[in-house]
Image (cartoon, rainbow, N blue to C red; front, side, top):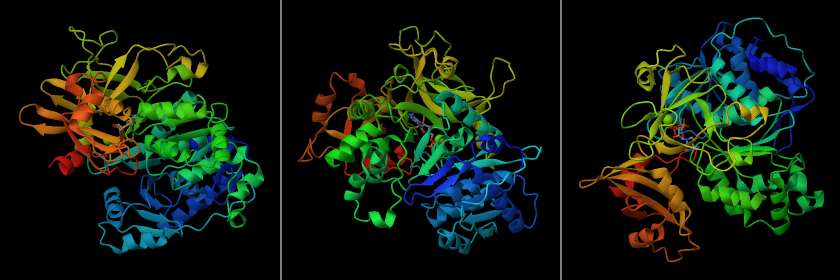
Amino acid sequence: LPRLPVFEAISRHDPDSTVVIHSSSGRRFKYGELLGDVRKTRNRLYEAAGRDDIDGERIAFLVENSYDYVVTFLAILAAKSIAVPLSPAFPAPELQYILNHSEALMLLSSAKFAPKAHEVLKTELDVEPAYLQLSKFQGGAPHERVILEKTGPGSAGLMLYTSGTTNRPKGVLLPQSVITSQARSLLHAWEYSPSDHLLHVLPLHHIHGTINALFTPLFSGSTIEFLFPFNADAVWKRLAAPFLTPDQTLDRDPDASSQSAFPPREKITFFTVVPTVYSRLLTTHKALPLDMQSATRAAISPANLRLAISGSAALPTPIKRAWSDLSGGNVLLERFGMTEVGMALSCGLDVADRVDGSVGWPLPGVEARLVDVDTHTVIEKGHERDADGRERVGEIQLRGPSIFAEYWRNPEATAKEFVESKDSDTRGLWFKTGDVAVRRPVEGGAGRSTAASQKDWARGDMYFILGRRSADIIKSGGEKVSALEVEREMLALPQVAEVAVLAVPSGKWGQKVGAVVILDEEFVPDGRWTPLDMRRALKGRLAGYKIPQVLKVVKHIPRNAMGKINKKMLVKDVFA
Ligand code: ATP
Ligand code: MG
């Protein structure tokens, strides 16, 4: 295998330690088996391609979250090709789009998704990918010493498509050097270790599930337990397992004999998901039997669940508070990232460094700056307020070795999103994230950690995300309103279960602040909540100009797979 840092790391881990567990069956695979399976699969890719120079070719794959997924992903890197993970949840036209757009040389699938793969291959494609069905890896193969060759990494990499929240998903090319930098940065900041046991409940075709919850743990020798698709009851049951006696577990599981290995009983130490998952877990917790409630509380207490992380969308403070109350002080760590940059900003490991509403500081290796959205000048340290004392709002721009290389086959978009730095240094271009933020001095004891892993980056003013420049900054009568800020306050109202705040076009104001709300049925049983009720409830919580002028009560707010809302579409649907 080529001497990629990820293979070097894997070859150094204890071969007898567990790399992957399938939560539902309890099947386990060891680090010592992994590279042998990767090499065999890499060779099968060469056979299917009819050649062994497939450097930089895109190989798309449709495999369930499992050991097979891990082997397939790594085998594509081992062939110095570009891994293009597909979501089994995508309908055929979406898969077709990605196969065409990535100009895939090959399509791989597991047995389970062979029908889906064939369905796509039958459609008219612009490309003719070779198809290969992967056999199930049996695991348990004798440990094999795999030689790492002293070759360069070639063009190995990962191509992920953005979530498509604002537009058609863009193909983001992440060379292996970039994903390695991302992993090293997280490894340092979040201190992944061989004693970490992650519960993985995320899709694997997004950066969050792939880099934070799979690729980085592989570097550190952690155990990854797949439980997918996410199911709140199954997650609670799994978290509780180490804290229940065997008969307690069996009692409430009539099918226990058929799934004797479920659930595995190691303690879960690391959990990273999106805010909507925490929200689901909090809601379902109330309905658990009492002994399960106490077992799960123990499971998520800070002493047991070392790190619970939230990201991919803004974390509502009420969710953060409720999780902390339920767990006895496990304060969710929020971070900010995107497909193009991996993780960019993060709160710190010290509880004091997890300030409400903040996404923390630039992670190790990441350089960040704010560029004033009005004056287009860099907001220098110490100049976070303008002459009138108002906070200056800036776009987050980033650079460093963990930033992506290019949008695939889209040089115009690539050129548009990078800017040259005026300070004439040569460390590369700045990437315009499209997200805006403010920087504020730290509160309380934040930024004072003495731990070596935190000291060099969790320092100085903290970043607070206001939202997307294109959709979350509402310009109403000359004032700028952050949709995220209004959403945060509205979610703190007992009447509001879910909310999207957005810009509604207005002749008089340019834009009006609009709120689309799902009401809490317990609190508003008759479903009646008027704009006046809303304004009364928000008075004193928000400045007058930030209080929504229009309100629409709905039963459902559409979200994509990562729990995000396309606000351009929503405003059209609701306020048309
Ligand atoms: P597309 O680019 O296709 O429209 P997308 O931007 O949603 O979709 P991703 O790359 O998956 O695709 O998501 C990155 C975006 O998610 C960021 O630009 C930001 O708007 C949002 N985001 C991520 N983490 C946070 C956070 N902690 N708080 C607020 N927003 C966040
Ligand atoms: Mg985006």
